Image 1 (cartoon, rainbow, N blue to C red):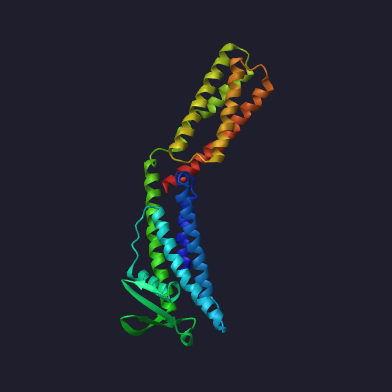
Image 2 (tube, one colour; image 1 turned 90 degrees about the horizontal axis):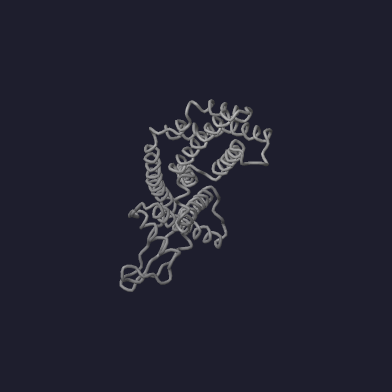
Length: 308
């Protein structure tokens, strides 16, 4: 079960680190931090449980209490983290009777053993040192209205039951996130990013190049009109990325560089850029033509994700 829980944790982490969802999540920093903290605590307590199960139980009585206290506290923290994780994604996970029973045993054993108020009644609890082992202990419980009761606490069984509940809760969360991802992709399933780039892209670059090399006003004007169509194409590409929440920082930086090159060429073809000479214009033109392949590849990769 620990491996299965780890796989589901990866699903959630991959979701929140996907740019199209991370942008929205980061707008609420408190909720984002709640998600990150909850994921870390669940993972940390899984490590603690795994180490407890794999390690030899100490012979020293003091360390036996430390091990037992730590294990029960790990179960308690894990429950809180799972509840807060689901809460951050607006998913209601009602604690099961099994989890409530585990929580109650933790509270009685190590939470408030010396003065525990429960349902209007006060209890005083004692862990029997003689019974303490890796697999559990006897909990002696006394209240004002009755004699001693003895509860056999089976730690191994508690761990198995809680991990099953955590696996179930994580599955609910992961399934909801997967459904949200499916619905997002479905919106754009029939609107491919690669279709933003017309088949005439090569023609655009060819005529822009001729506008740079030619000296007639007609060729220069034709080059400028094709450069304008290239710019409009990339404006549509950027808008399509924004609509899908796919415009990450790196893509935005590269697009800003691309638009800068277009603007520099615009100035040259219009004759308004005195500082730009023909060799410089050719360098910008070569950059635009070559860099286009990278953006086309980005469009293909995103389309592939959305078609899955």
